[in-house]
Length: 80
Image (cartoon, rainbow, N blue to C red; front, top):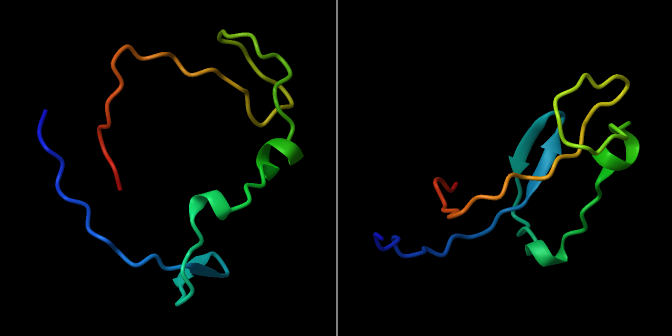
């Protein structure tokens, strides 16, 4: 496989919201392990109670939980 390009060290900038726009700030963003994840989407919105796989109409739910399809040889296709 091809050798990936060397990693460059980039400063990490935080972002502040102004309405619906993100504005860069001078405060650095904390590392991922220090962030608190709040899964408000799953906690606050109605989900499909049927977790069985299959195609069906879902009424009164805003999301359905699914298990990903296993891949024999996963590889990174894109990164940003």
